[in-house]
Structure formats: C-alpha cells, structure tokens
Image (cartoon, rainbow, N blue to C red):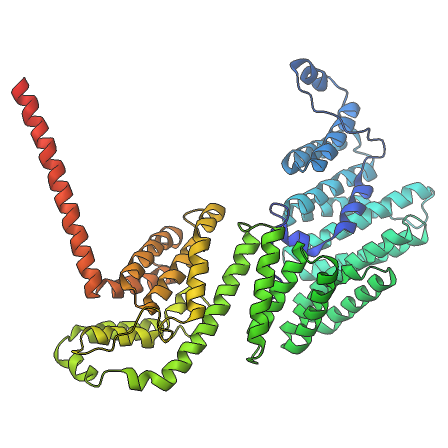
Length: 551
C-alpha cells in the first residue's frame, strides 16, 4: 500500500526530517546546546582590520564569537555558514575544554542537531550525537553533588537522544531509533522531577517522542503499538486544548490503517483531519496535504462511488497547493500528476466499458481478409503493439497509459480497409473527457516542470511519455511519434539505452516509425535536409570560385 502522505518540500534537503520531528525538538535542542555565556549576535568581520582582529583574538573570545555568529546564521537561514561555524566551535572546545566533557558534549550535540534539522544529514548527525553521548554517560552519576551540572547533563542528553533517534529513523536504523526515543522518554521524566523543564515544554517533548515512536512502530510492522502511541498523542493535544494540532496525528493513524488494508478506518481518520484543517487553516499547506492524501486513498478504494469524492478532493488540494506553495512548487506538480493518473484510470474504465459493448460492432467485416491479403506487415506491427502494451494494464507508470490497444488496433486496421469507419478526433470512444483533460493538464505543466526540474529530468520525460501515449490512443500518430522521440532522447541520457524504461519507449517509437504517415513525414524531412545541405554546399562552392577568380 502506498503511503497516504503527500510528499512536500520543506527546508532544503530536510523534508524527511521535517516529517519526523517538530518544533519542540528544535527549541529544546537550542536550550540544551547553547553556550551559557554566549553574547548577543555579532556581525562577521567585514574589513581587513576586523579580519586581522578576529585572527588575533584569544581562543576563548573566538569561541564566544563563533558561537554567536552561528546562531545569527541560523536565524538568517544561512545553513551552510551556520554549520561551518559550529564545526569550528567543536574544534575550539576540543582545544580549550579537553577535560571539560560537558562543554565538549554540548558542542557535539549542537552540531549534530544542526546537521539533522538544518540539512537533513542523518549520518553526520548520528556520528556527532554518538560522540556527545559517550562524553555524557560518565557524567550521569546519581550521586552528583552539583544540581546545576546534573540538569545541564540531562538537558544535553535529552537533546542527544532525540537527535540520534530522528537520524536513525531517517537512515532506517529502526531498532536504534526505538531505543533512542525510549531513552529520551526516561531522561525527560528525570528532568521533570528535578524541575529542569516546565510542564508545557514537557508536554511538547512527550508529544514529539510519542509521534516519532508511532512512526518507528509503523515501520517495524507493529501497528497496535503505533496506534496506541497515536492515541496518547491525541489525548495530550486534547488536554492541552490544541485540537488544530491533531491533524498530523490523524494522518499517521490513517497511514497505519492503510498499511493494514483497513481503508474504511483510514478514510475515517483522514476525514477527521480534513474537517479540522478546513476549520482552522483552509488555505495553508497542511490542508492541501490532507486533501491530497484523502483523494489518493479514495481513488484507490474499490467502491466506485468513491471516484466522485476523490475528484473533488484532488481539485481542492490543487487549489490549496497553488495558493499556499505556488503552481511551480514540486508538491503542486506531484499532486497534479496524481490527479492525472486518477483521470487516466477513470478514462480507461470508460474505454474498457465502451469496447466491451461496441468493439465487435465497429470493426470492419473484411478486416481479417484485408490484413491477410493486402498488407502482410501489419501483422508484425499489431503483434508488437499487443506484446508491448497489453501487459501494461495496471496503470502504475506513465508508459502503461498506452494501453488503449483496442483503439490502436482499430486505427491500424482502418488504414488498410476499403471502407474503414470514420472516427472523429473528439469521439469519446477513442479519446474521452478524462483523457482529454489529463493531456491538457500535462501539456500546461510541461514548461513548469522544465523550469523546476530541468529540461533533462525524469519528471519531464514522464510527462512527455504520458502525452505521447494519449496522443497514440487518440490516433494522432505523427505528434505522438515526435513526442515519444523527445521522451526517448531524455530517457537515453538519464538512464542509458539498456534501461527498461528506455527500451519500452524505444519499442513504441519503432512501432510508430512504421506507420505510413510517419514514414512519409520522415521522408519529406529527409528530402528537405538533403536539399538544404546541397544548397549550402553549392553556396560555399560558389564563394570559393569567386575568391579564386578575384585572386
């Protein structure tokens, strides 16, 4: 089962992290790893004198300066510069505080948090959080004499476990993630008993841990434990009077139920999330994501009455994505592609229904005799068509939209029959309304995808493949040949000529290249190019003769 969550882009390179950890971890990590004697934000040295002064600073002053500058870079969303300064802080702490395990652990913990939250680099975050944990473990003595030191150790240790758990979840080390989050839960209890964290911050962190554990248990195929954690999160949010925050929990519950094949329960959870989102943030990104998820799960349901609802939710999600993220955002384009797949499935069902009732009536009576007597090679083309496209009936990839094989069969036979039935381009039996709308959407999105993803991207290739496939089903073989040829060029560069996608498209182009009208167009194009080349050569030869006579 596919996940009900729609993929969206958050901070650069950290979309997975954003789905796994929330604001409470970030605020807690800042408090856990900030230098206690950091001054206010400082401006980086701009002039040569300032740079020389920075170089001549004592290591202690330089550490304070870099600590403050890293925070300023983070506030300004300058992620790379922030991490560079935090790396320097770790080096200076190692130089200045080799014997002070707590300060060095705080530096590693802060760097780990930055790697994970700002860049989404799970491996680097795991490495530095592990170093910080090794430094802190000898300090976790129950007989500690200094209460302030004990609180600082616990705060830092909580941050380390949260970061390590999130990074482990991101890198698919699920057992490590479970251990880290359970340990974070234990440390949080100790910290609250000592008065090191207030009730509100404790509730936020408990919610974060419970949410992350539910995702770990879901990935470990332990749905009962995952749902139990979600129910705890719902109860905490209701106790805090924050029902608007329950949307993400209901979405997690829907994903768990969908994995188990319980579509009715999944639809119920998403419907609750949708109602809450529409009442609190109808124009925000979360509302678009929930509508998108609900549309996807309704479109996958077996009951035909869900199709109308799915179409409405797709339209709603596209409108919300356009308002909140913009029409060129990858999330909007992904939702648009999902909507087109839904339209194609609906159109395929209509085509199948039409063929079941009318195919025998519309085929020419003399089709078989004409094929056998007049155009032998059409058998080879038709055999390739059925071999290539009949296995592609699951509609899971764009290449499978070529499966309106009955229409192509009818079209090829009609070319060579004495009195083929005339079928207009807009005839719904060959090109129904869902197909038409799908290809219109894809053509309109092509320029946006080129701008967003690049000319030589998989998204552009898939769009061209889909457009060409529907053009084939419409019977517009010359445009289909051009479109599929462009797609083939991109796929050959992206995947290579031996990739299964490239091979499938190559077969389609080869079949189209045998159609007489395509062959004639290629011949005319070849003659034009030959004539142009001849004129160019003659022009160059005439210029050479003139130069020789002048000399």
